[in-house]
Image (tube, rainbow, N blue to C red; front, top):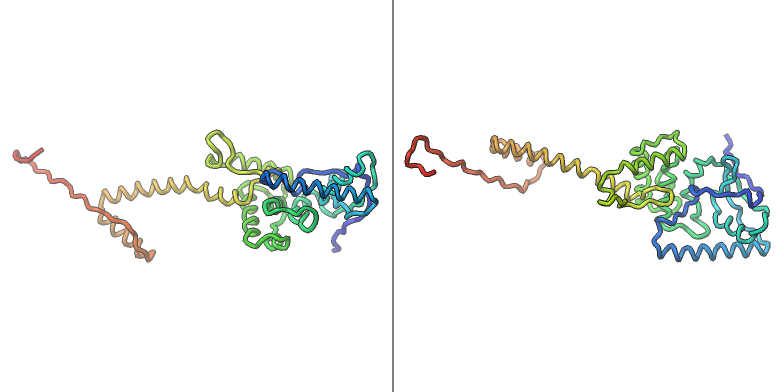
Length: 288
């Protein structure tokens, strides 16, 4: 079966719109210093494109998808801004390329947008875009696919692992639409344990502009939430061992030696025998 092809055509500027979920770059995950510098570079880039348009030069078509009767920008948000800056009072015909993606598919393909042109993504933006794409995707995006877009192997593996974990814990199903996925991620965030929040209820983790946590938090939070369970198990086991020692410390020592021998290791534990006091029955000379 022949794959659907994109269509290059023209559209009035007023008919092209944006959707925040299709914008790969997020400001919330940037450090303030980086944001100021990058913001200036982006403004300069938009100005350059606008100048080219005013001079009658052609630029790369804006990639859009058709959704709900609208044409949403898939790749080319800054080109659209340049058109709006160059023609504030006009409605010119804009070169576009209609991509053969559904809205859901466009979200799942966001990880490779803006990687080879314009103001490239930094590592944080790239990893967040990849994480969101992996979560929105109906199918598992492989780490190798992320690597082809410039993400290092180890990082790609962590991102795909975090996405699988988030899908599992948030109970995201392959049939869920983007709105349902967002709702389930919001519910997952609300279920996070207390150790993810400060005493005044403030979050101890970051969310990007799309309300997604970072891949690092997903993986590390999983480890942190096991700690109370381990503590409870250690407390219960300690209580059991104390009971065995009190009842018969020789049995305890034999069990300890057996465990050490089975695991082929020395246990750095010392057990001291406590002598029980001697009591003298019917002895009037005994000291009390």
